[in-house]
Image 1 (cartoon, helix red, strand yellow):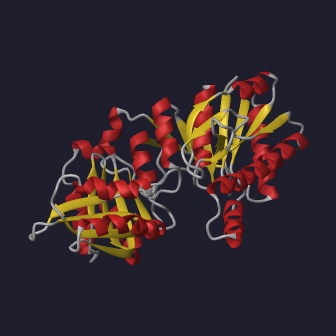
Image 2: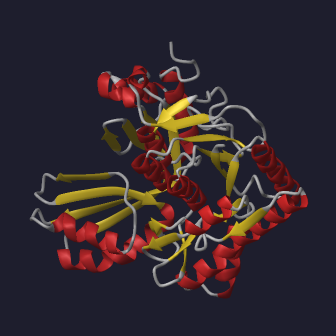
Image 3: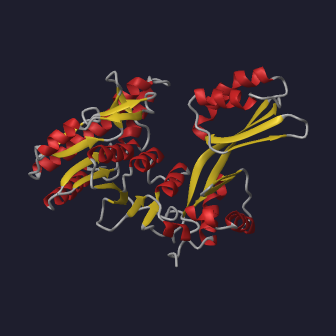
Length: 408
């Protein structure tokens, strides 16, 4: 008997008919002789609707109360899925993140999993019950409801699979798996049969919406092999696992894009030790995640920093930087630019192949697409381009590396 964890996203449970379909799929999995744990997101659109209601009441709702409010979305879903299962004759029970033993730390609306106590889940499984667990949530050591941020149900599923030592973890969503690029942008994008944790992590952090990056990190840390597949059919998906030697034969695994980015440039920074720490420390305290960071010394002897962030964080960043810039002196100034997007090419084959950046930049140049900032890692090259050209850029790079064709 295998223990299978299946996670269903908001689109998969977006209507009552889809909830019935999910329940039928879970029943088939159980009838095949498996123990089954389902992790379920809020119905599609529910979380956004709850946030809108909160902000219609007040411009700055308490994050603690937001957590209490948002957690109800998943609780609605698990109750409905469990009712559908019980109607089909399945002995099922719904449990919240706290009841599942998910203990969290960190700020409200951005909780991080601290540890797991799967005792109650194991007890229910030993009693022969199917579990339907609320994704996206846990409780703090003080018993406060904590949500895990956007995509947190993925993290819940991986954590539950790790805690229960599940045989299989399946992330079921409205796509068939992980593609070489978003098929809505690149029609000839190809589904990948497998991808390494590191590649998946880079793609997730670079704009791919298939998986939340923290869930991939958690899976790598605890060795949870998982499959991304569709909840609407039985086609094989994409396995996400530890890399093996044959993977390096593929230079680029995929291309991802991230829209709605902003670039912030600070000029006139005194060229003295500790300046970068003061600037980035202020942004860190404001809980703003920076992506590309470039620093250099201008011809006038002052330092210059540029970095990117989500456009939604721009106002918060300007407020956090205001006292720091004032303290740096009259030469220090902040410049901001919106309408920026990020394009990333990812592949562990970069470690053993040369000329990847040249191929990418030549292709973009031939298409008349100008590059802004450039960032590299061992397995990723990322550039900023004008947001109006990001889809063209994705198609150009995808074609330059022949990603529409299976590897030889």
